[in-house]
Length: 345
Image 1 (cartoon, rainbow, N blue to C red):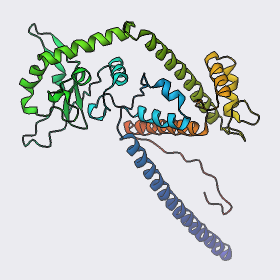
Image 2 (cartoon, one colour):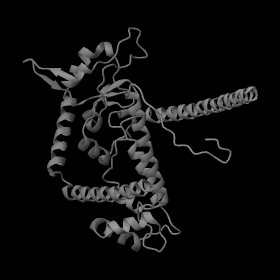
Image 3 (cartoon, rainbow, N blue to C red):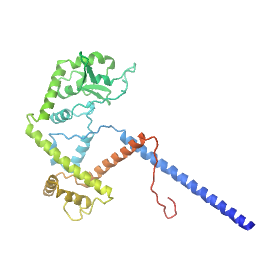
Image 4 (cartoon, rainbow, N blue to C red):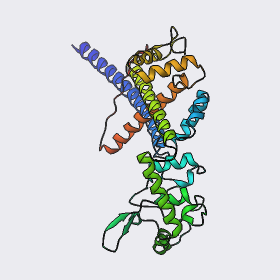
């Protein structure tokens, strides 16, 4: 009996030792996972904190030239356009007819927030207020100042129509390199600019152009209609491309085969899926025919485009995950692990 007790105690000791060792290994593994997850979270936050409002924009007059370039150049131009910020005039390129049409069609985007930063040159801690986006009329009615823009990068105010249509650029509101940031002088300066002859002239030009573009009554009506048709065609093609990428990713399928040319044998699941959809999608079928006839034309089927779209979709998913667990009071993390040959996870 005593020998059995001794053996049982030894077994208990061995079990306790093995349990403590296993617990220690798991704690070390958890610490490593926490570090990896913290790095991943930090990287995701850095990406989400990059300049927001990356609204896609496609300019008008350059479309025909872009279609004649190779796909690498098209990719670079599209990436730059995706980074265009409508609410930050200092970041805008030089105003031309193409950019003016796109900005008028999109409209003025006002950066309204609860708190604005103080001016770096001010010792009185003054800052802009969103109440200036509204104007009080004599009859008590409030009207939105559509023309007024706030730039976060410059911490200054700008006038949307004066930037687009003014030839003199005498006012700070019209100069994208300066802007108006004298917060102490907001009361006289904003109404003065609003009632100036130059501003009223530019505001009228803005609204007339906006109406003509909306109703299709501009002088280059036929050109604008053709450009709009071309834009819709490319949007529909890109939708199919993105849907095909999501289908392959969702089912864990290999994208590419031995050939990257659509229509050739062993061209891969992605290009074969595009061909299948083209049987029921007339614009896509026409596009594939043009690609086969003109091998240098833009296709949006290349491996570079596939990788870029996968990266953009991945960023969106990661950003959504980070946003959700930031809003949640508590959350859990589930890791799917598998033991290796040494029986370690």
